[in-house]
Amino acid sequence: MMHNQLQRSNPTRPGAAMEEVEVIYGDECLLVFNKPAGLLSVPGRGEDKQDCLSSRVQRRYSDALIVHRLDMATSGLMLMARDLATQRALGRLFENREVHKRYIAVVNDCLPRLQSPDGWGLIDLPIVVDWPHRPLRIVDRTHGKPSQTRWRAMEYDGITNSTRVELEPVTGRSHQLRVHLQALGHPILGDTLYAPENVQAKAPRLLLHAAALRLTHPGSGRLLSFQSAPDF
Image (cartoon, rainbow, N blue to C red; front, top):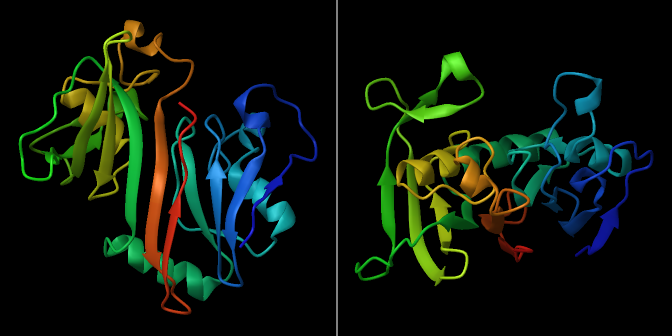
């Protein structure tokens, strides 16, 4: 198991993207990283969007391949494969919903705990690209793709009027957690895409973190489980 960091070799931008990338785990098949907020998962369009987690990782692990992504503003656990066979196998696990993911977020206002036996609720709202306002997504019950998110309220902070929540995406649509919480009436603090200005101003970044990842190793068959505590 690895616990070290990748430093950018030629830093040119200030801010969160200058942070180091922590290596949570590595073996001959796969790697797990803790992506900082403000860093792209893969290169974007334009010279100013080439710094990303995948390019930093590939400078050290030339065989590393992308399997899934996190939004630029989201921090937390990201998985990469080290060969094509593992990439395909991990892709199938994601497609078949056999990778368990859990996120921590802080949302606006008081989101009360549910009285269900386990305290978990389900947001079941279809999502589609908002074409006139790309890259935004919206809930669309007619044209949207099926999208489900499990959620559980953890604790309410009366000082900031916010609630810490756990989230488990059942499906994996782009911006799903952010859109679903907005639709629930509780946008995530610091969300510059889906929260009103007063909620954006409550945090210096999007308070959304990929905190847990569990899957079966495609090579050995071992159950792998990783956790990463948010810094908020």
